[in-house]
Image 1 (cartoon, rainbow over the protein chains, first blue to last red):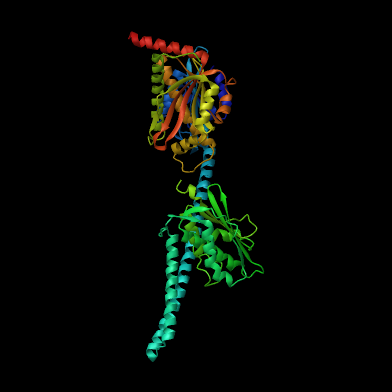
Image 2 (image 1 turned 45 degrees about the horizontal axis):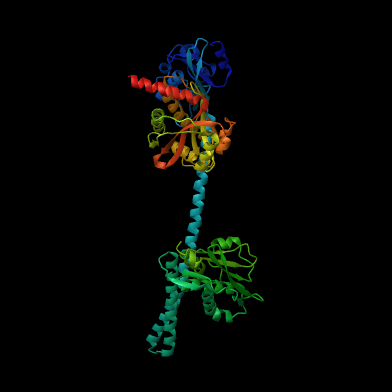
Length: 378
Length: 208
């Protein structure tokens, strides 16, 4: 047997053979290269005499192997340097090792434990490198997400400043006019009435911006206690949009909505979403030669889907990504607050519904998805 | 299968098995620096066709398992397994290695770690049997297999209709609510030998 064991010198792994008394019987050439010990220095010595720091677990495993015949592995994941070996043959660099133990018996029935040592330093380094890269990618992705959030926040802040500054400038202007009247002691009552009514309007505009912000920040509550009919809500929304529609040549069709579609909701808020979508559609298509808006509703699974489609040719994907952000607007200065869509989306979400752009449609299509009344609260 | 175990036989088998898994639990906690509490349920013994056992595993594991197995020979031969659903095995390794990079598949070194965990468990159980019966149970080096339970077990067992003795204990890491099994397959022609050894051991106990 001991002659046959010489073959272990030809293999590119470490092999230690120990007998039942834990004495080293064979120490192969590979180990001579990767440790400070030559074979003749260790043969006949106990393994824990050579390596006083030999882990108890390894000794138990060797014992179990000899006594019970069990084969074991010690991977490099939990304990990396079982034996004090070097990674290269110039006695440098700690070797990370994987250990396997098995039992051998010689012709006389004597029992031995064969300890095989594999150098896993390189694969360990490779794994660590990959792990580090994965971590870096994770950090970079998070940074990018934060930057996008900050950009949104910046846009929102400059939007707030712009939207509130405008009415304040106008109010200040009237204050100036009033002060000059006071100086001259000439009070034009008609003009003053007009001024105060405009100040009132500007104050209302500021109030409406703040109300919008409150909805976005989830500070406003809704009343979902009304069973409402979708057709009636759309009728009402279109009626309220009439003054704006009549100033344009936009044709609107909403006649095909069935009159038995019911939802639990705050109808004023839902009609607000539809008014807002109609208003956006008008702004986008009013300059076309034959602009139109088509509103339909259909039942799908447990939902009703209300689609507001206009004659526009869809919205570019990069704008769709941002258009629900507060204060994002593509309209001319002073035309929109940039709050409409984000408020509408918050209202839809508060109703456990959704508001999104259907990008598969050839025409610009917004879909408002709301839960059917019979599934509400389930 | 008509083979019925007496209460005495079943009790002893459970005791042996529990002793083994108890020891394994201690080793594993040591491996993971005592950070996790490992809880083992009382082992269950079933004698059933391999086909039925495979379908039990299919339902319990979402039809995807990772299994560390070791063949053993001695007074009775068979295969010992540590079985986890694939998802649970990934969590087990990530947790034991204290790694915060979520993986979808086992890398080479993670496989090694899982193999080591399985090896500790299986050797402790077989070691307990070995010590109690004062008989040598020789084990081969562990191997790791992933896939559907059918594919994993087809390898060593071409005939799915043959009954196997299936001893299994639920192996749970308390903090993570991770559940898996450690199980022993016995070839059924050897079950008689196991029972004889149990009876002999019981008689020795009575005689004392």
